[in-house]
Length: 75
Picture 1 (cartoon, rainbow, N blue to C red):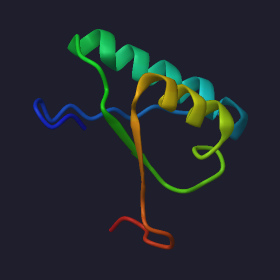
Picture 2: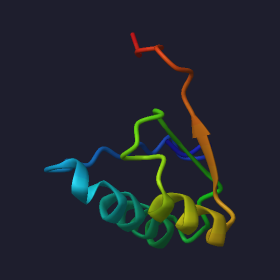
Picture 3: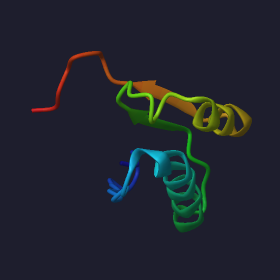
């Protein structure tokens, strides 16, 4: 969700092996749509989100990766 527009995205990911490519694609698509850089994303702590591919991409782009607290399902 963006803080200025309240835009929220949800994307289907068919399997965990596609997660990194889909996250990176979603960030690029969002940046094109809003004509601005993404400053942060928030995910859970699953390996599908915390891995070298995503971490390297986020670091290279200067995007913060906020992680939810362990064992804290959304209500």
